[in-house]
Length: 456
Image 1: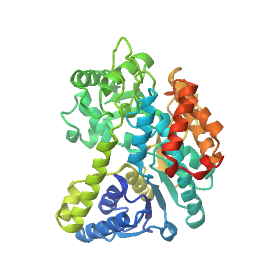
Image 2: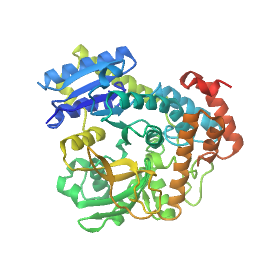
Image 3: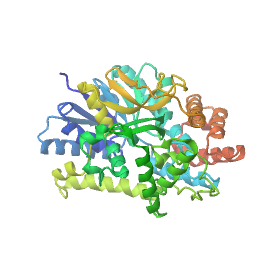
Image 4: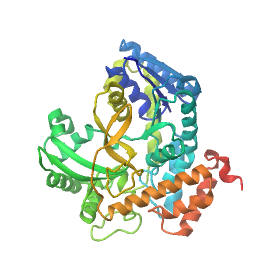
């Protein structure tokens, strides 16, 4: 069998650059392939390539590691192109969140919905589409896998404006079977996630669907019996222990989840993001739950994580950390698991963002939803789900149309459409706030945005 070539555009990303190396060395399907790193920062690229060669040599692996600041030099012959880059992502997420907070929009993540999601897409999608053009010319049979948030916006952009390129979007928020291990622990089936066995994972059957970061649990069965009561008891136990000093993405998630479950009849499955997609905790506390407003994304703390990552890389290169430490410090990655199954014909199922194609019966066929899919080298094939309940469907549709307008605004560089997207966004309270945030964000982020936004 031919050995695969995976190109990672964004070698210096916090997660995927190192985890792809770990996975490819560990995978019987991928370990004889090629891992090609791309990063526009020459110093970071050289350090990642050096790390890759050091780790493969230590593991006596035949994996080939290469890299270039010019993606065109490594795209030829690629089978998969993974997008995992950001233009000074932490810095600008911090700006997004600080300006939005002035207008009552509190973003605990800040890069998928609200002004933060719109402006991150404005910074990243133009480059994503340029990568897609290079793929079309240099490796037209390659699959482009987008990991860049806002995942759905960028996935729609690829689907609508790079139709000749084979692509789908995904993130690690529904990484199976690892998420099942946490759910089994919360249900009380096991004491901690690492206690789960493969049989336990298979015995837990869930049906989940929705937009990435905004999915809902339709049903859950464990050994054929309804598991929703156990899910609920686990959430109630977690809610009783929650405190305000948790990380903003984790704070009060169980309490928020229970409140939304009671209102809409389905359990939201990605609460550290989903709570940011609804307006209920953006301002004044809401009775009867009296839940607090959302905490805001801590940009400084996130930057420390990036700094620690590069310190770790440098410690490997200097010998302060032994190479064997690398294999105990990382784990399987969702995207590489999908690639392994696609390339090896393993017939595993994964949650990825795919055109709906009738899986959710009351949404458009081309709605980009996060769905359980059979996936092979022909691409994802969503499995049937059923219909969204009224209420959830309207929220999902509003978010999708905000995303569609965001893509249209970016491609046309049209301020009127940008305004329409911002006003439609579920977190924005008024036209005046939308106009003010657009003006402030354009001014603050001029260096990172395409020049066309300032040409008139």
